[in-house]
Length: 243
Image (cartoon, rainbow, N blue to C red; front, side):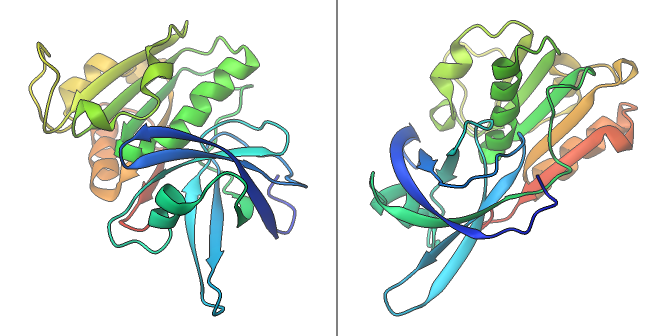
């Protein structure tokens, strides 16, 4: 999927799903789409009437499904692209898409090693694509997800993750506000969290970590300190304007 030249394609919005008050999933129909792997991303380009154009990268939120591609976009204050995608784009509108991009931060259903997914905020998006790819393929590979976010109202895919997924264990961490009766106090990811919600290093899991740069560095350091193989820790990070 990465050996071909990437070209810009016209994508038409066919469905919108609200995830949080500031994030929405866009389901796009892209004629000629070559397919993609769970974990890859795309470039989205917007062009104004005066010819000015700008682009941003966004992770793909679901496994390959013909010519349909799902993106979950978090609105970035003062951003150039995300406010348009989250507030103005309507069903039937078109944008330009280029991809898929990336071949390292991907999970293939042929994998047999246990998988640990560690998400910070909107870093859940490519990891959710992996969870969905596992289900789509009928894989029995055991998955564990540690999902850190500021407060419960910011959870993406909340209803879907409440459903039973045999072989998938989900641990939520909240850094600012916790639900009523929540045992763990609000706070950042710790080695105790990783010990409780992750896999022991001796199990040899594939580890995928995605989120803001600081979160990714902290999670990676913890995994290394626990004895995980550095070659099995794959990371994807984003800044204030990233995907």
